[in-house]
Image (cartoon, rainbow, N blue to C red; front, side, top):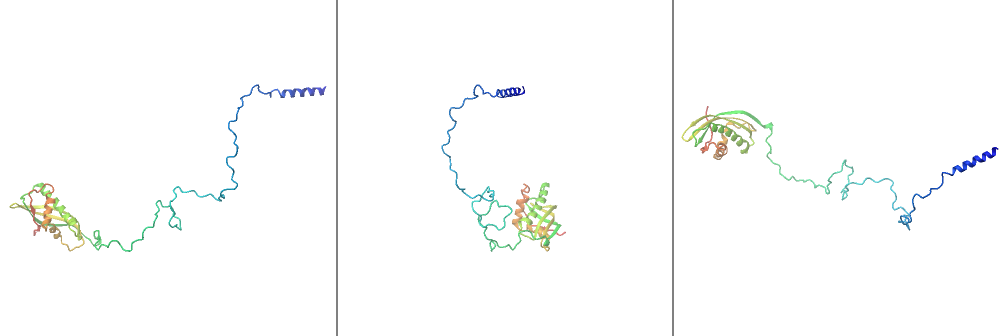
Length: 246
């Protein structure tokens, strides 16, 4: 009784294992009639029997972005910190053994302050000048005379006269008296000056008189200074200046 029961159990297990593995009724997709690509008849390239170049033991350095067209003329023994952006192809010429210019015997700049004397606010009173062609002055002409005579003194000593002994002249002029005559006006004025000099022996009175000694300088003073502002249109000329004893 026990043996027959074991055979019945085994037959049931065997029949149940093959129920779920039956094939599908229709194929999922029809096979292609021809292959998609023709097979290659021979290999495209025969393999090399030996390597072309021996492999490098270490990798090469990174190539330069801007390689030079020509090699350097002479390599430096010690590398520079940074390469030059525009290296010179040819060496610079040798320096000249003979100077190109002869040194000047006269200094180009003003003399040293160590040998310079500064004179401040030196005053000269009683300076007289004849003004020919006029007999009076208006208020504007008085102001023009003072302002333009100050400017003429500075121009004459600082620019016009080629003299290194006196420079940096600043002048102030004050008209103090006017005396009318026959088509002439005698004016008296005071001048106060500050300046630098390398010659302490130069007399201050000479700086007052010198700009009016030459006729050409006096004509320049009349035309370019007194008549510059449409004043003194009837003025013909001026005399040299003199110092009145006080």
